[in-house]
Length: 441
Ligand SMILES: Nc1nc2c(ncn2[C@@H]2O[C@H](COP(=O)(O)OP(=O)(O)OP(=O)(O)O)[C@@H](O)[C@H]2O)c(=O)[nH]1
Ligand SMILES: [Mg+2]
Image 1 (spheres, rainbow, N blue to C red):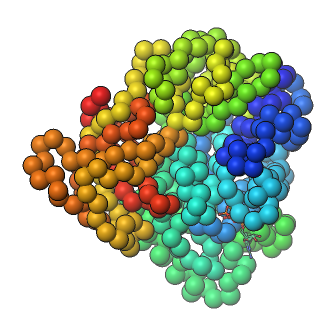
Image 2 (image 1 turned 30 degrees about the vertical axis):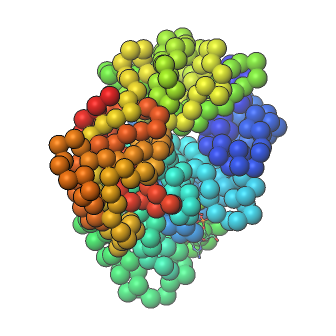
């Protein structure tokens, strides 16, 4: 247990596989070489006395998401409700440090008096929207950070749209960098525009809490009236506005795999947010999607935020140690489920909205057999879109702004279910959003 505890801890906090792979860094070496934040203690039981909620920071590049995430842990640490994580231990990959931007999502943890939070700090840069989608797909609610100095920008809009699409229900707005703004009217304008934007994307723009402050002042311990006090206000808004979701613990267990790594001598660990159900240690499970046949295995250990657990429940961010499964057999986007409860499919009917040029979408239409990339939960998969069989004119174009029903065929099968939302991206931008309306086969 101690070995698992040590090794899982940094990885559950920080999902950086992509960067490690890019840079050729061995994740295992990094895990064993560095033991961030005192993970050398013996595993203690995961405390379930407070309701657990998954949130995170989204928004345009450089607007202050990581600074705010660090500031929250600082403020909560002062109250004995978190371990302080400074900026550098959230954005810690060498490339992130060099470029001063977030690339991979980072998972952090803190409490308020009322609830326990798992918080994903997402990248804002347009090139890393893919990582943002994965991060947001585990959130029950989100904090959108918008710098007062810039106002809303392209990824402020894209992230709101994507958050809505992956099922985030409630948003709290943090208007950041107010220390850099003299003009009060400017702040009012940013607030007004954010309310309008929220409404445009289907959130409750008029009622959404908007907190104006400075993450940097909070982190540096300056000007508490726009620093620390605003963090308190923000967390109060998060506590009150983002409801504790009803978790589907009654349904059969299902978790989308977000990250995979191996621990020498122990085996392969898959981590992710549990969608539904409850899993006990030593339960039999099946890995479904991406490959041909489902892989049967057993979960021999469970860990949540470096704490060992007897069980993993809907809403938890868990690491599952899988018996006799090779690391390369487990891929992001697969699901781990109760045997026999889910199947992987390649074809489904969907209802889609195609974004306009103004919404950041394509400038031109597309036709039958269009081949974009599909993002569903943690999965991303090459897809081909076709007109359904009952459409007589197959040469018909789909234009930006259209609502259409199409048939989607995936390159490799995924655990698709009716009602799931997905995004369609191409060449680094989101071009459509959709809903699975019927699974075909
Ligand atoms: N003046 C001022 N600067 C801030 C504030 N918050 C953050 N910054 C600065 O803004 C820059 C970007 O901050 P980050 O926290 O890295 O922004 P981010 O949104 O995480 O950026 P990405 O993750 O790359 O999208 C840094 O130089 C911060 O010091 C603030 O309240 N006031
Ligand atoms: Mg960042």
